[in-house]
Structures are given as C-alpha cells and as structure tokens.
Image (cartoon, rainbow, N blue to C red):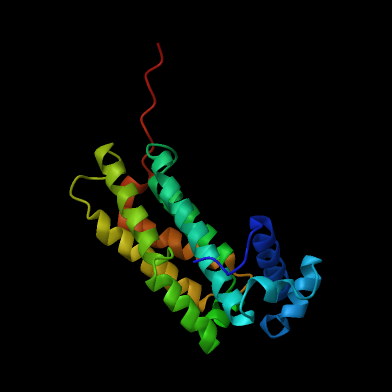
Length: 207
C-alpha cells in the first residue's frame, strides 16, 4: 500500500528515516508530525500532505520496513551455495530486527488507528512474516538441491521456526542488545541445521 499523494519516492524515505532518528534519540513519545518534518528538514505540513495523519504514517513506515526485509529474504536465492546456510539466514534475521526499532513496532501495534491500518495493509498483500517465511523455505529447498542440506530436512518447518523466533525477538528485545539477538538466532540455527548449516561449497581441487 502507498500513502495517498506521494509522487516523490525519496521524500517518503526521507520522512521515514527522520522518524526513526527521532525515536532512537528522543523516544517514542517524542514522535510527532512536527518533530518528523523538522528532523527531515521539510515544510511542516508535508507529512499531512502525503499521509492521512501520524497513525497512517507510522503504519506505512512499519510496512515499508517489512517490505524491505522481504526483499532481502528473497535475495537469498542469489546466495545459494555461498557462505554458510546459517550465516545467510542469520544475516536476514538481524537485518529485519535492525530495520524495525522496538519503539516503532510498539507505536504501530499500540495506537489503534495505526494498528488497524497496518492490519489492513497486510491483509491487502503488503509483505510481512509470511513472505519472509516463504523466501526462507525456497532458499532452504535450493540449498537442499545443491547438497548443502540433507534431503530429508523439513525446509518449511525450519523456516517457520526461524520466523517464529524472529517475531518473538521483535516483540521482546531490548534496544541496544543486538548481541543477544545474534546469539539467540545463532543457537537456534545450530540446532535446526546442525553441521549442515555450516557447510560451505566444496572448493575445486588444485591442479
């Protein structure tokens, strides 16, 4: 879903990035339309020109970051056979957590109008956890075909477990504790993938 009247793509991202800086620096309570436009160095009415209000803006910010993360997950296809399976999956999970600050998620979930707009957006097809799960499943199945995961591994269930843990971390993590998220996902992937998750593509023999 796109906010009404937005004709300049970079303006949308400029406002979103400004909102994230305000929340990171001053907390969720400081996020107002005025604070966002001041941070973005825009005319004070520009947010309301392109969004119905702050609630719609917050919801669209959340959906935009989910869409970005879904694209990163879909890009895993290009990494089949490269690095390790565990590292490739973990990179996407940590990028998603980085892209969705806890305070922004909290605003989108606790403001009734923002929550409604977000839910309607997801119901209308905006990418969310289901798109990321599908991309993870497709990636794992590709790695199976390449021999880096056992043929009997349940790719869909592994993807579901990774996405479920990501959702839990997103809802419960403490700002500034990225190391904890990395350790948690690392342990999970080690259990789910075992030694296969650390298997790299075999190097060709030296002539």
